[in-house]
Length: 523
Image 1 (cartoon, rainbow, N blue to C red):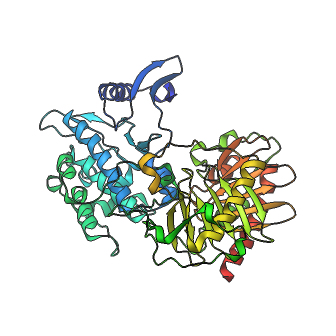
Image 2: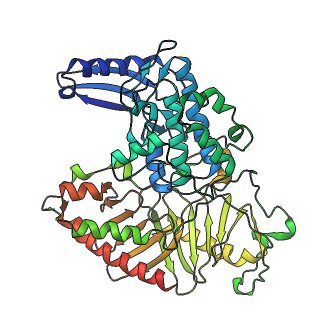
Image 3: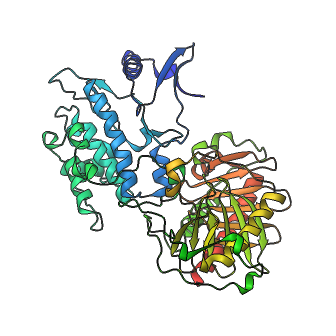
């Protein structure tokens, strides 16, 4: 499969616009690097120009940052190194990208960076500079704003803005007004929070030097101690698009390798209730961003309330194509569930084939899709990780036995709703984390799940319609009775209108979100 960039010729009326389009094609087709979107061909008809490009199935860092806000340092170094490698190649070819930003840093199915969109790129002769005012406001360098002449250093500045955004959760110079953003850029007015690693803070400061001559080159960035002296993963699992990975700078190993702490499943007593529980002495630390106590319920409630209180156009037709936004499609949803809360708890399967159980004592057990690693979360939220290799730690023997019952029942008796592509994890398997159920309840009309990544899923009993709401993307995905998915941005629904069926279901969603938020507040 390929991607296709389509440009209307109505935008190419002026000669300078045609020249710009020609330069973009000329530059992009001339480059070939593993971290640059591959250019295949282009053609045109009477109305459009079509550019055939490499398809990047995992969207871009922009969508990832919206879902994650901030990322861990090993992930940051992984992405920065790949971006820098691409820029070293471009600069060696005397090409300045001039529009490096999260939305132009794409991800392929292997979670590798692919730099794309050469619409503002230019080639420089030795000693040459440009004075064109161009770029994206939050990433634009001060020398561009000052029309002082700019060169390769603008890409370094943009990289600094990218690093800051992925570290802090917002761009360094962002304000509500464009003129204020430009003032802050010209004054080099930004603040790094005190909890940021000092070595990382120093790295950011180097990239955001107001004097372009004092910024490091891309080749020097590759040799910076922040990248050279710290752990960089060789790969990342796709779960990182939504959930922080299970890694730290010491490349943590799995606990419970001591046979004294585990016993074979084959030796488990048939009577689960008589199993002796022995507490584990330590748990595995993880790299994880701090989540709000309500796991974004208040944020989602505000978004849905704003949408429903706006002057929404209610359409009789079910055609909502204008509001569709495929990039907002969820990465995780519940595809199967079984309710045994009268005795044990609720079991479920996520779309990536990982299986979880939320027990009645508020503990959770999750088997990852590789069927090797499992994840235990106690009632206080402390996380522990083990290998599911026919052994279980003593204090989890009872729960792992119950877990097998849940798993076998779902695999044997339940149909699956949708499926995300199952990846071959390899060395990534020890890094995977997935969201789990934070809260759930049933009504006469539906079963409602709230996941720890902020997702709220509503499965309606009568017609088997599902809604999946995401606060990070400010979007809702509608799953029809045939399992077809359509994602809609709230802002686009507000702009173009919503069909009456989805409108009624969103009203119901608002009610259940209010209920969950109230219950979470009472905890």
